[in-house]
Length: 128
Image (tube, rainbow, N blue to C red; front, side, top):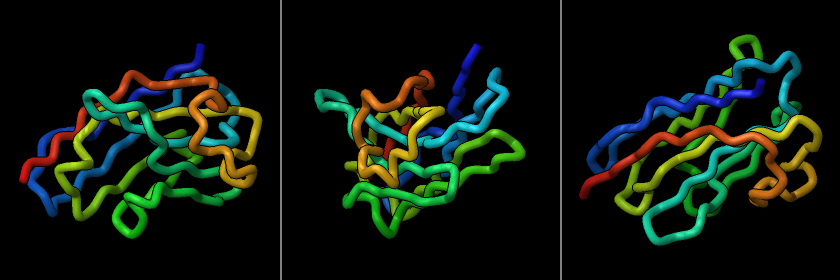
């Protein structure tokens, strides 16, 4: 049974930092691509960042230079380090995974439908 569990969300003031974690349990093999998406109230879910198994990364323009995605294969954990947070970063953040394709390499990491597995989300709130 595949299970992705996010943690690390919370409330922070603008300019602050948070690190999100996503533990991938219940699966024997490494995911090919893993990513972070977010959804703000009244908005569609959008891709934030993703990383392929070979380390290739992709970022949304809105977070480049501020967010860093990484993965620890030994711990089956995906991270999102978020620095210089802004009020517009406020959203529910979701972890997603796909076992088969190198989505960053394919240029499709922002496509929700490419990911077969999703976590329940963790809330990030940034106040001004």
